[in-house]
Image (cartoon, one colour):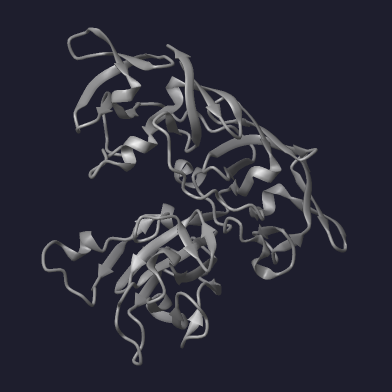
Length: 412
């Protein structure tokens, strides 16, 4: 559960101005969100905000997430040397490999500088350009008992990683031989790393504009820079101007995309000519149904669930939670033709319906996406169901009905 939460982010990236109040928006567990002009500092477990009416202090332990005005960078045309390193701690780093040894590698990050990444904390190294050109990229999340190097053409080497260098990774193959494998042949490296022990105290998840995600303890902000110790052991020193969003890892809430659904029912309006609908129309966790970042109304969320109309997902609550919070909308990547109705059911009874929602411009029938779901009381409830219908009686046609449950979370 910790690793799932550590990857979590609810506040819409670059959406701090959505309420029309201020660039910085702090979502709290208790009370309403706090809007401010600037995040002045973080020190001693407290956030200091510079607001129009004066300074506002918010305990870090009461924070869900912080939204900044900085958007994510557009998807780049990657060069052959650019990589994303996924860590077992739930972190991701973007940059280029500069050097390495038997302990790990040195990454040149455009936003974090030179970062030494320990091999025992790695989960995978992705060569972004080559992976993007593959019709069927390798599955880097399946269970493995050894390290694996994936090559162009689909071949793979089951091995033990011995060391990283500037141009190649050296592995011990099944025959016990040490073999250097040039990065120019590699699409991805799977490493059987370990997340390590979670440190005590408050943890902060931070997403940077290039998509890097770091998690650390003891965060401080001063003179426009964020500093903390990463879970993987390296020092984080990032400009606040490069931060898209941040959130606190807390046992006080959980994201639905991190909680396995007890039941998923899929009844698409258009039946596929071949294939299992439950597979073809399966929900996408923390991605849109089309596999993109979750975006609606020009805003981006890092956490959420992308579905197609005709999808109903149910979670067992067992009275463990008090409140549902979420946004809902048609995904921008689907184009302007989509139209759906979102519904929230508690113990089988409808507690909220969005009415007919459209993507695209608001001058057509229906509400423009996204809309905020009112906070829904689930105290003592046994089950929660999120359902998306293919429009209404006036427009039931499920064309481009890529729907997003955005930042959906349960407060304990």
